[in-house]
Amino acid sequence: MADITGINVNAPVALSSTNTGLPDVSNATGNELTMNMWGIKPSLVKELSNMNKVYSSKHGMFAAVPIVCKGPDCAYKDVCMVSQAERTVGQRCPMEIAAILSRYEQWCAHFDINTVQDVIDSKDLVDATLIKDLVNIEVQILRAENKIALNGDFMSDTLLDIDKKCQPYYGKIVSPEAEFLMSLQDKKIKILNQLNATRKDKAADKRKESASDEAIRIFQQVKELEKQQQIINVSDIEFDENGAVVVEENVENQDGSSEINTLMNDSGGDLDGTSSEEIS
Image 1 (cartoon, rainbow, N blue to C red):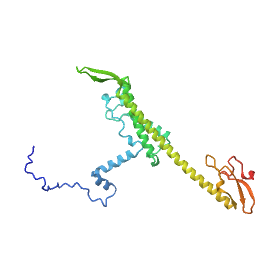
Image 2 (image 1 turned 30 degrees about the vertical axis):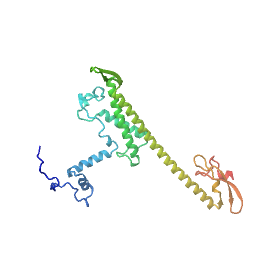
Image 3 (image 1 turned 135 degrees about the vertical axis):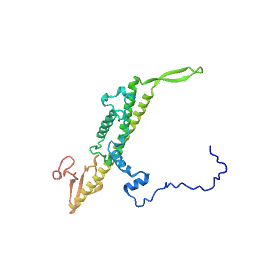
Image 4 (image 1 turned 90 degrees about the vertical axis):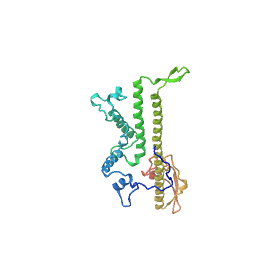
């Protein structure tokens, strides 16, 4: 152990000559700024570009999910559906990759997310992220179910107590794999609820937009009646559940005479298909 007696801890100490501060980046842009920010070598810029493209793709965030094949040492070798000839040690599990690709496409189709392009549209990013988490949980469910299948039971002998004579007592309780599976099912339900909630929010936004569009359409109809030199009482207008005009109006002309007209929908007729000419 080094002798520290006689050392003045208050004395100034010369710092290392190694420059650990951020260099001048006032004029740096793009890759140069990236290199200076994280202190990476220029040779890694291309690697960053490749990885950026991978993680930006629709399946990119699944890159770390599939387990690595360990051949005869794999915990799932007895339930593996990959042929013996195609099991490559050190390679990602083809069985899990297939599950990821199929379930992701199925869930995206269910929630109307376009996966034709390699990159998900920004408007679907929140839903796509939730679906990624959902598929990740389903892969873990697959692993838990395989473990239960290998054990042959969802109950396991577990050490419950040890008496004063060091005699162990075992009992049958739910296995850790079964408990893990149940917790994953709860997480899956929560994510599905979140996805349904985003659908409801989007539907509510569309209803708001539809109401605004309907108000504009009615205003345009009123302006059209004014152009025809007709006077209407806007407060008497009534609407059905869909926001469409449904009542007849007593229209007073400029010459003092009055007549019954019905405000029409966009098709040029009344809601029941009757034209304004037939009513008048």
